[in-house]
Image 1 (tube, rainbow, N blue to C red):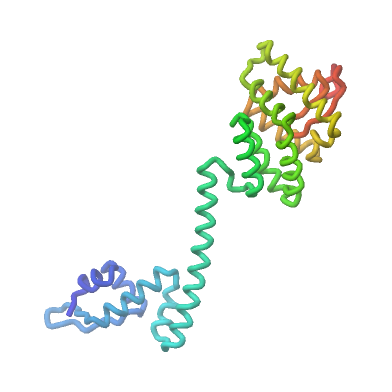
Image 2 (cartoon, rainbow, N blue to C red):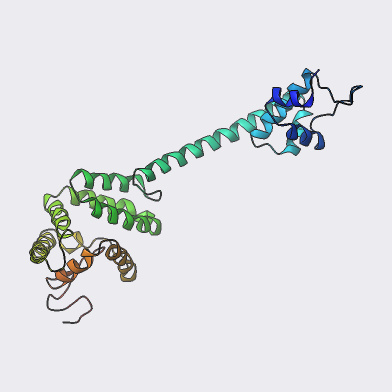
Length: 264
C-alpha cells in the first residue's frame, strides 16, 4: 500500500494535485489506516495516471470525470476525438514554428512565400541588403492591404529582375546609398539612375517603372518609412526629381524643372 506521497511520485504528479483531484471527485479517497494515514493501492496509480494524461491533453476536469465513468466504447471514441484535436494543434504549432524560423532568418511573418522568394533572388543578384530590407518592409503592408494583387505584382517583379538593365538600376542605387548629401558622386549616380529609369520607361512603357497603382497617400506613407530607415534616400529622390522622376515606392515622371510638389 502507498502513502499519498508515494502515489504522487509513481503517477508523476504532486501531492497537491492528488488532493485537488480528491476535492473534484475524480479520485476516490481511501479510508485511513490505524495510524491515521490514507493508503492507496495499485488501482489508484492507474486511475491517477489516466487523470493526469487526460488533463495534460487539455481535457477539462469535468469532462475527465465523465470519461472515467464511461464504458470502453465511449472512452475509445472520446480518446479518438482528443487525438484528432491534438493532431490539429500539432500541425498548427508546426506552421507557427516554420513562420518563426522565417522571422529569425530575416523574413516577415506576414509575407507570402512568393515575395520571400523574390527577396531572396534580389540578395542572390547582389542587391544591397539595406534595399532588400526596405523592400521587405514595404511588401508587408502591401500584401496585407491587397493580397489579391500580390500574384500580379510578383509576375511583374520577376519579369523586371530578369532584365539586366533593372538589376543595374538596383546596383547603382546601392552605391548611391553610401554617399553623403555633399558627395559629388551622388549627383553622378542620380544622373545614371534617372537615365536608367527613363530608358526603361521609353523601352517598356511607363507602367513598367510605375506598376503598383497605389493611391498617393499610401505610396507617400511607404516612402516616409523608406526615408526614415535610409536617410540618404531622401536626398537621392530630391536629385531624381530635378531629373524628371520622383517617388520611391511608386516612380512617377515629373517636370524636371519642378519639384514633386509643383514648386521650382
